[in-house]
Length: 278
Image 1 (cartoon, rainbow, N blue to C red):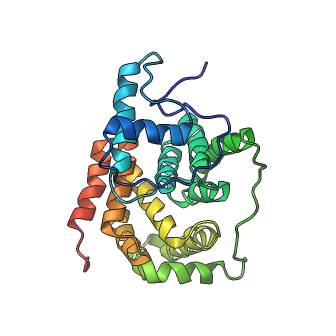
Image 2 (image 1 turned 120 degrees about the vertical axis):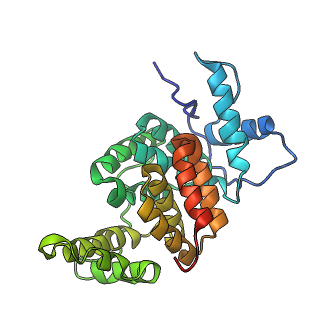
C-alpha cells in the first residue's frame, strides 16, 4: 500500500521534462497556482479530496505549491533540487523518491540531481547520502535511466588538494585552517586538509553543477541541520559566488515546509542580520 507522506508523492509515471519557470504570478490565486505547479511536478491533481487525511493535504498543498512556490526569484528546477537535498538530509526517502520524479518532470537532469545529493556527503555524512542515492536510483531505474550515470570527476589524486583550494580560498580564505590550528596533537591541520581535499576537491570540482548552485544548495543543507556557525560562513561564500541575499532567503523559505518554521527562522535571521564585514 502506498503511503502518502506529507502529501508529496502523487508521482506521474513517465512525463516529459517540462522546462518551466516559477514566476511571481500575482494574477493567480494560490489555489490556481497550486494546481498548476502540482500538475507540472507530479502529473496528478492537487486538492482532490482523496486519501485518509484530505484536510492536511489541502493545507500543505496550497501552502507549498500555491504560496511558497511564488515567493522569491527561483525557477522550478532550483526549487526541486532544494527540496531533494532537504529530503536527503532528513532521510525522508519515500518523499525523496517521489520528488526525484518531480524534478525530472520539470527539467532537472539526472546528473544535476545526482550531483546535488552527492555534495551533501561532507555535511551529513556518507551513509545518509548512500541511503538517499538508493531512493534516487530507484526512481531513475523506474524511468528507464541507466545507472550508474557517467562520471563527473575532474581531479586526480595528485591535484585534488590544489583544485579544491582554488575553489575554497576565494570563498572562505584560511578561516578553517586558523580555527583548527589548536586542535590537540596537531591534527587540526589534517582536518583542514581533509576539508579542502574532500568537500572542495572531490565534490565541488565535479561537473554537472556550477559553484553558485552548489553553494546555494549547501546553505539549504546547513539550514536543515541548524549548523549556525557554518551558516554565517556559507552566507558570505554564497554572496561571493554570485547569489544575492534575496536568492538565499528564497531558498531558505523553500526549505520551510519540510523543516518547519523554527529551523528556517534561524537561517533567515542570520541572513537578515548579516553585515559584509562579518
